[in-house]
Image (cartoon, rainbow, N blue to C red; front, side, top):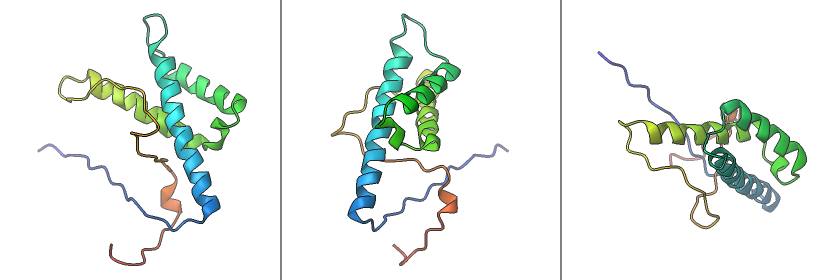
Length: 129
């Protein structure tokens, strides 16, 4: 019998102050912009795709040199890279009906920041919703 791996995620709606909301909004837009930079770097390389090592090195250098990209935590930047690479794996997998990864626009993409260390946040539920 084959076991199926189940992905678990918890989406929490937080009551943020204006300053916290501004920081989180900046991180979400930085994550979207990083996706677009990765897409450009990965696809427009004279007919060959960039390796994972090349993409990781480019992210590290960009976080040092571009101040607004430095707002995004390193773990969240690595999560964007992981999600981007998985989008390409899904595209090339014949059993997985996925479209080719594209650029994300500011207005059509949902602002989100992946927090890999979210289990350490200890979010307390206020009600059952």
